[in-house]
Length: 194
Image 1 (spheres, one colour):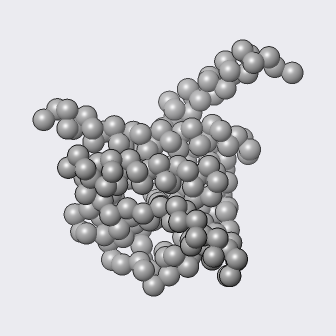
Image 2: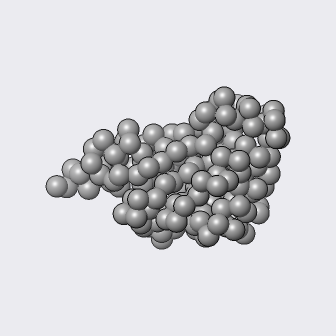
């Protein structure tokens, strides 16, 4: 069994390697998609379960009205579909957990909207159902996945993928959070350069 120091050293080495593998071109594609949504007056829907729900919420905070919006850097109408406990639990109870994101998107998606889906496995049934629906509506999808990418990686138009061993949730979620902070910090540095 590894002691704490050895574990920390091993974990941070793995994390550094994953950070070094971030594809800047994919981050550019995501930024371009966000800017197109802002220019066209669309909405960004962000979804995810568990830790990925927390990342979806954090991204909505950083890139939405309370982060970039109030600073006048990017005006995104952005909503995390995991943030309303009453809606989530009512839908899970009444129509099944696999429908909690689909039902919130159904009959709401408009031209110029974007869906960002976080899923470490890429196979969360409620995420996949929502993404399949978004695709039938012609909505662009950003898939943010880990492990082998799962079905989300096959369905998404843009893929930010963190390839790890199955079960490395911490590492995957760390890098997903870095994606949020990369985008947020990019816009902040634009402000500081003015």
